[in-house]
Image (tube, rainbow, N blue to C red):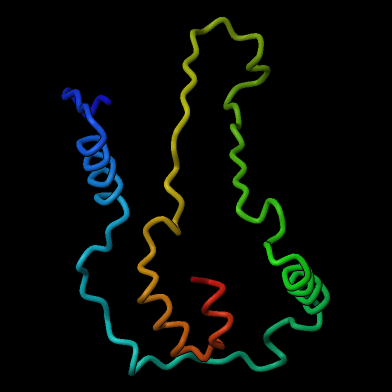
Length: 133
């Protein structure tokens, strides 16, 4: 296995290299976050939350989740659209370069313990918080 410019061999060495690599990406940083005990959240009035318009879609989504024990396919899908800055870009004779970017998803770097504390302070039920975790 190649790690940088070094070749790593053997099960134990490779295991340590993999753990070290992913540990550096997913390890929680020791960041001081504000406490949640004094957080106060405003609540929407029923006239402000558009529940009448959204109720059907939200309840169908939740019912389907309860029936199937999984989220709707495509919920985490990402679409990227490339918009050309010139007319008829397909007839251009210029050299082109194509590259793929690995976009780190936001949930890969979430401090889950802190998020759980905040959701608890906001009054989310325990089962809901368990689903999020």
